Image (cartoon, rainbow over all chains, first blue to last red; front, side, top):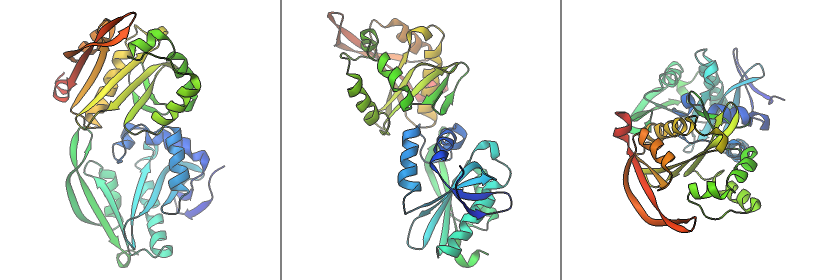
Length: 173
Length: 176
């Protein structure tokens, strides 16, 4: 049974993450082309993803939503509290569904929700220098690139820069 | 078959280690022949092993274990133990009926590449019983160099044996 509909867009909708989604999360998270853009790059088995579900998804701190086309899960989008009034948005989508603008719409939905309902002042995002699709999302949505942390992460055989992005409440429409 | 595909080669897939594999694993790690190859001496009770597996492999982020899967069957296990930020130690066990197909070499090569390119280690270490020529040859094929012996370090079949230490550096791997 798919999760409850939480936010509705044109191409995608965001639903609550349910226990049935753990396997999809595990299978996608372990793909080399997905994990190379994420900070945790070790194998994660079902038990560990179940832990993530029970402690993080079901916890009070973050908002994690399933990115779905109709009722089919394609990825995960999250809001992670950073400082007071500041939250970071994070996203991954199974490569099968890349290139369709799903990531941009899912991010737009969750960021709108953050400003509208959570009274957040600023939303931030991060992308490795090699992750062009992610950088494009933040640029399209009107984020400003605020910084470039030099050689901040080892991925794909080299030390890479991490780009930091931010958007303020009054800049979001 | 459970387990998410983590690394993929031509004839094998390396999958995440799941609870469904426990019984297989425990069975395999009870044979004395296997144990001595893996530089272990004593079998553990299945109950004890299950507890340890849960603690050591399912939640520990320093130790990686992957299942070598060949044509959807469990062909063996791969290990990567974090020593420090410079070095990780690799270990492999291919189950009896899956040997001599090159699965060991292919799976070790996938994991070595992962250790260097994704995790950023500088060197990979392997420790092999001196009498285990099959493993030594396989590692040499991959570019590992013998760097020393741990003299009479392991007791098996009534006598002390050396453990051969072999290592591979990132640059050596990349220029191969």
